[in-house]
Image (cartoon, rainbow, N blue to C red; front, side, top):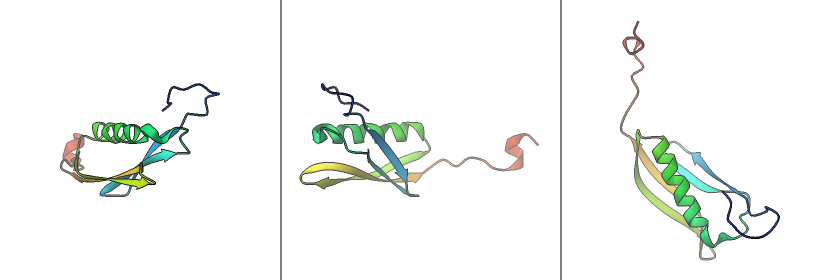
Length: 92
C-alpha cells in the first residue's frame, strides 16, 4: 500500500497478516513513512483477509498501540464451515 505524498517512493510499505491458528496479527511490513493513517490500512487489510476466507467468523479485534498510534491489530476468529475431505466428496 502506498500513501500518496511527495518523495521517491519510500512511502511504500506492505501490510502483512500472520495467522497464528485461532487469531491473526496484522502489522506493517517495514516502516511506514507516515503512521498517521496506519490504523486505516491495517483495518482494511484485516477486512480483506476475512473476505478472502469466508469460512472464518471474526470474534474480537484488539488494537496494539505504541506512543498513542495503532501499530498492529490482533483479531480472534472461529471457523464455522469445514471442507468435506471424504472420498465421496471427490466423486470416487
